[in-house]
Image 1 (cartoon, rainbow over the protein chains, first blue to last red):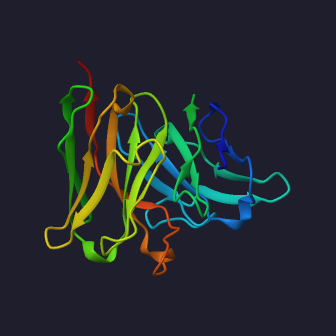
Image 2: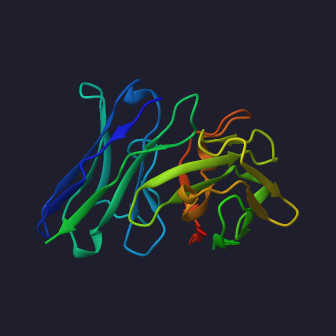
Length: 111
Length: 126
Protein backbone atom coordinates (compact mmCIF):
# COMPACT_ATOMS: atom_id res chain seq x y z
CA UNK A 1 0.00 0.00 0.00
CA UNK A 2 1.10 3.52 -0.61
CA UNK A 3 1.03 6.62 1.54
CA UNK A 4 0.56 10.30 0.82
CA UNK A 5 2.96 12.56 2.69
CA UNK A 6 2.07 16.18 3.43
CA UNK A 7 3.86 18.85 5.45
CA UNK A 8 2.39 19.12 8.92
CA UNK A 9 1.89 22.86 8.67
CA UNK A 10 2.45 25.90 6.50
CA UNK A 11 1.91 29.57 7.13
CA UNK A 12 1.74 32.65 4.98
CA UNK A 13 0.45 36.20 5.06
CA UNK A 14 -2.85 37.42 3.64
CA UNK A 15 -2.64 38.22 -0.05
CA UNK A 16 0.31 35.90 -0.60
CA UNK A 17 0.47 32.52 -2.34
CA UNK A 18 1.03 29.20 -0.62
CA UNK A 19 1.61 25.73 -2.03
CA UNK A 20 0.92 22.50 -0.14
CA UNK A 21 2.61 19.36 -1.40
CA UNK A 22 1.43 15.75 -1.32
CA UNK A 23 4.02 13.10 -2.16
CA UNK A 24 3.07 9.56 -3.09
CA UNK A 25 5.44 7.01 -1.53
CA UNK A 26 4.93 4.23 -4.07
CA UNK A 27 3.17 3.99 -7.37
CA UNK A 28 2.84 6.84 -9.81
CA UNK A 29 1.07 10.01 -8.74
CA UNK A 30 -0.11 10.67 -12.28
CA UNK A 31 -1.78 7.27 -12.59
CA UNK A 32 -4.61 7.98 -10.16
CA UNK A 33 -6.61 11.13 -9.60
CA UNK A 34 -5.80 13.32 -6.63
CA UNK A 35 -8.43 15.24 -4.71
CA UNK A 36 -7.95 17.99 -2.15
CA UNK A 37 -10.25 18.75 0.77
CA UNK A 38 -10.51 21.75 3.05
CA UNK A 39 -11.62 21.26 6.63
CA UNK A 40 -12.22 24.35 8.71
CA UNK A 41 -12.23 23.96 12.52
CA UNK A 42 -15.39 22.30 13.72
CA UNK A 43 -16.64 21.57 10.21
CA UNK A 44 -16.82 18.66 7.81
CA UNK A 45 -14.40 18.37 4.91
CA UNK A 46 -15.33 19.97 1.60
CA UNK A 47 -13.72 19.19 -1.72
CA UNK A 48 -11.76 22.03 -3.32
CA UNK A 49 -9.96 20.16 -6.12
CA UNK A 50 -10.91 16.93 -7.89
CA UNK A 51 -9.28 14.94 -10.67
CA UNK A 52 -5.88 16.55 -10.03
CA UNK A 53 -6.74 20.06 -11.13
CA UNK A 54 -10.50 20.51 -11.48
CA UNK A 55 -12.36 22.99 -9.33
CA UNK A 56 -15.92 22.28 -8.19
CA UNK A 57 -18.44 25.00 -8.82
CA UNK A 58 -18.35 27.53 -6.03
CA UNK A 59 -14.65 27.09 -5.26
CA UNK A 60 -12.75 30.30 -6.03
CA UNK A 61 -10.21 30.24 -8.82
CA UNK A 62 -7.62 31.18 -6.22
CA UNK A 63 -7.44 27.43 -5.61
CA UNK A 64 -5.56 25.31 -8.13
CA UNK A 65 -4.15 21.79 -8.27
CA UNK A 66 -1.28 20.27 -10.18
CA UNK A 67 0.73 17.09 -10.57
CA UNK A 68 4.53 16.84 -10.82
CA UNK A 69 5.65 13.46 -12.08
CA UNK A 70 9.32 14.23 -11.47
CA UNK A 71 8.73 14.45 -7.71
CA UNK A 72 5.78 12.05 -7.73
CA UNK A 73 3.74 14.63 -5.96
CA UNK A 74 0.59 16.69 -6.20
CA UNK A 75 0.26 20.28 -5.11
CA UNK A 76 -2.51 22.57 -3.97
CA UNK A 77 -1.81 26.25 -4.56
CA UNK A 78 -3.87 28.99 -2.98
CA UNK A 79 -3.23 32.50 -4.21
CA UNK A 80 -4.43 35.79 -2.77
CA UNK A 81 -4.67 34.21 0.67
CA UNK A 82 -7.57 35.21 2.88
CA UNK A 83 -8.02 34.60 6.57
CA UNK A 84 -10.99 32.38 5.69
CA UNK A 85 -8.57 29.99 3.95
CA UNK A 86 -7.13 29.05 7.32
CA UNK A 87 -7.95 25.36 7.66
CA UNK A 88 -6.61 21.84 7.43
CA UNK A 89 -6.06 20.55 3.90
CA UNK A 90 -5.99 16.88 2.95
CA UNK A 91 -4.96 15.24 -0.30
CA UNK A 92 -6.57 11.95 -1.30
CA UNK A 93 -5.92 9.38 -3.97
CA UNK A 94 -6.42 5.64 -4.48
CA UNK A 95 -5.13 2.47 -6.03
CA UNK A 96 -6.60 -0.87 -7.05
CA UNK A 97 -6.50 -2.14 -3.47
CA UNK A 98 -7.74 0.85 -1.50
CA UNK A 99 -10.48 3.16 -2.76
CA UNK A 100 -9.35 6.17 -0.77
CA UNK A 101 -6.02 7.03 0.84
CA UNK A 102 -5.65 10.36 2.61
CA UNK A 103 -2.56 12.35 3.33
CA UNK A 104 -1.93 13.24 6.94
CA UNK A 105 -3.21 16.77 6.48
CA UNK A 106 -1.60 20.19 6.46
CA UNK A 107 -2.60 22.96 8.79
CA UNK A 108 -2.62 26.27 6.94
CA UNK A 109 -2.19 29.36 9.08
CA UNK A 110 -2.86 32.73 7.50
CA UNK A 111 -1.19 35.34 9.64
CA UNK B 1 -29.69 21.00 -1.95
CA UNK B 2 -27.68 17.88 -1.25
CA UNK B 3 -27.78 16.87 2.41
CA UNK B 4 -26.28 13.97 4.30
CA UNK B 5 -27.28 13.51 7.92
CA UNK B 6 -25.54 10.95 10.10
CA UNK B 7 -26.92 9.60 13.34
CA UNK B 8 -26.45 6.68 15.69
CA UNK B 9 -23.22 7.67 17.38
CA UNK B 10 -22.75 7.62 21.12
CA UNK B 11 -20.95 5.99 24.00
CA UNK B 12 -20.50 2.24 23.85
CA UNK B 13 -18.42 -0.19 25.88
CA UNK B 14 -15.52 -2.11 24.33
CA UNK B 15 -16.83 -5.17 22.56
CA UNK B 16 -20.20 -3.55 21.97
CA UNK B 17 -22.06 -2.65 18.79
CA UNK B 18 -23.54 0.43 17.17
CA UNK B 19 -25.30 1.07 13.90
CA UNK B 20 -24.70 4.38 12.20
CA UNK B 21 -27.17 5.78 9.68
CA UNK B 22 -26.74 8.42 7.02
CA UNK B 23 -29.93 9.80 5.50
CA UNK B 24 -29.49 11.42 2.11
CA UNK B 25 -31.66 14.05 0.45
CA UNK B 26 -31.50 16.41 -2.49
CA UNK B 27 -30.18 13.90 -5.01
CA UNK B 28 -30.94 10.49 -6.49
CA UNK B 29 -29.31 8.38 -3.79
CA UNK B 30 -29.55 5.13 -5.74
CA UNK B 31 -27.18 6.42 -8.43
CA UNK B 32 -24.24 7.13 -6.16
CA UNK B 33 -21.54 5.09 -4.49
CA UNK B 34 -21.23 6.06 -0.83
CA UNK B 35 -18.42 5.89 1.68
CA UNK B 36 -17.64 6.20 5.39
CA UNK B 37 -14.62 8.11 6.65
CA UNK B 38 -13.59 8.57 10.26
CA UNK B 39 -11.53 11.11 12.13
CA UNK B 40 -10.15 10.91 15.61
CA UNK B 41 -10.62 14.39 17.10
CA UNK B 42 -7.53 16.43 16.34
CA UNK B 43 -6.21 13.85 13.86
CA UNK B 44 -6.50 13.15 10.16
CA UNK B 45 -9.10 11.60 7.89
CA UNK B 46 -9.15 7.83 7.47
CA UNK B 47 -11.19 5.89 4.93
CA UNK B 48 -13.34 3.14 6.50
CA UNK B 49 -15.69 1.58 3.96
CA UNK B 50 -17.43 2.05 0.61
CA UNK B 51 -20.42 0.59 -1.19
CA UNK B 52 -21.63 0.69 -4.76
CA UNK B 53 -24.83 2.45 -5.76
CA UNK B 54 -26.82 -0.79 -5.94
CA UNK B 55 -25.56 -2.12 -2.61
CA UNK B 56 -22.95 -4.44 -4.06
CA UNK B 57 -19.17 -4.34 -3.94
CA UNK B 58 -18.66 -3.43 -0.29
CA UNK B 59 -15.05 -2.71 0.56
CA UNK B 60 -13.38 -2.16 3.91
CA UNK B 61 -10.20 -0.86 5.44
CA UNK B 62 -8.13 -3.66 6.95
CA UNK B 63 -8.65 -2.41 10.49
CA UNK B 64 -12.46 -2.84 10.31
CA UNK B 65 -12.81 -5.81 7.97
CA UNK B 66 -14.70 -8.58 9.71
CA UNK B 67 -16.09 -6.22 12.37
CA UNK B 68 -17.97 -3.54 10.40
CA UNK B 69 -20.64 -4.03 7.73
CA UNK B 70 -21.68 -1.36 5.27
CA UNK B 71 -25.11 -1.51 3.69
CA UNK B 72 -27.75 0.73 2.19
CA UNK B 73 -31.48 0.93 1.63
CA UNK B 74 -32.10 2.85 -1.55
CA UNK B 75 -35.83 2.93 -0.91
CA UNK B 76 -35.14 4.84 2.30
CA UNK B 77 -32.24 6.89 0.93
CA UNK B 78 -30.15 5.63 3.82
CA UNK B 79 -26.61 4.37 4.22
CA UNK B 80 -25.62 2.25 7.22
CA UNK B 81 -22.53 1.15 9.05
CA UNK B 82 -23.00 -1.73 11.46
CA UNK B 83 -20.10 -1.61 13.88
CA UNK B 84 -19.40 -4.72 15.96
CA UNK B 85 -16.65 -5.74 18.37
CA UNK B 86 -15.86 -2.11 18.95
CA UNK B 87 -12.48 -1.15 20.38
CA UNK B 88 -11.20 1.98 22.06
CA UNK B 89 -9.28 2.90 18.91
CA UNK B 90 -12.55 3.02 16.96
CA UNK B 91 -13.37 6.22 18.86
CA UNK B 92 -13.79 8.90 16.21
CA UNK B 93 -16.18 11.13 14.34
CA UNK B 94 -17.69 9.11 11.51
CA UNK B 95 -18.61 10.92 8.30
CA UNK B 96 -20.60 9.63 5.40
CA UNK B 97 -19.73 11.05 2.01
CA UNK B 98 -21.12 10.83 -1.47
CA UNK B 99 -18.65 9.65 -4.09
CA UNK B 100 -18.58 11.80 -7.20
CA UNK B 101 -20.41 10.11 -10.02
CA UNK B 102 -18.17 11.57 -12.70
CA UNK B 103 -15.55 8.84 -12.60
CA UNK B 104 -17.51 5.68 -12.02
CA UNK B 105 -17.76 2.50 -14.03
CA UNK B 106 -19.75 -0.62 -13.31
CA UNK B 107 -16.91 -1.99 -11.21
CA UNK B 108 -15.12 0.96 -9.68
CA UNK B 109 -15.51 4.57 -8.76
CA UNK B 110 -12.38 6.70 -8.51
CA UNK B 111 -13.88 10.06 -7.78
CA UNK B 112 -13.62 11.95 -4.52
CA UNK B 113 -16.20 12.82 -1.93
CA UNK B 114 -18.21 15.68 -3.32
CA UNK B 115 -20.60 16.03 -0.36
CA UNK B 116 -20.08 15.12 3.28
CA UNK B 117 -22.32 14.87 6.28
CA UNK B 118 -21.71 16.68 9.54
CA UNK B 119 -20.43 13.56 11.26
CA UNK B 120 -21.47 11.54 14.30
CA UNK B 121 -19.19 10.89 17.26
CA UNK B 122 -18.58 7.34 18.39
CA UNK B 123 -16.90 6.91 21.76
CA UNK B 124 -15.78 3.45 22.84
CA UNK B 125 -14.98 3.43 26.52
CA UNK B 126 -15.77 1.55 29.68
